[in-house]
Image: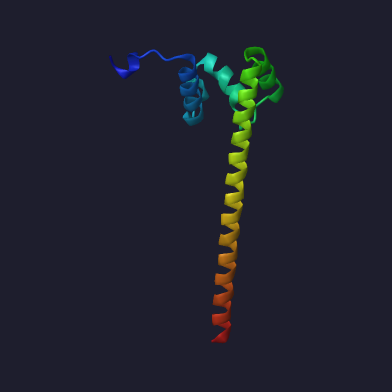
Length: 112
């Protein structure tokens, strides 16, 4: 049995379509059904509608599913905050290092 012949469950299809929509330069290459999911889950896109996303979650999920999604989103937010703090710290250190380098060269230039 080849890899293409393996039937995909809905979650795998959705994941494939989301990855395809993210990496595809042409939005018309994504199927119509997956574009609904992509527009609902594409939090980083400019067309994201939070109210529509929440309504979809409340209609399709039970309380346990909503709580699980809350936990997942809280973890994602914490990871993103940590990544952002790390980027700020790294860029700050690079800025300070560049400033120190410029000061050293200015001092050397002025001392000649």
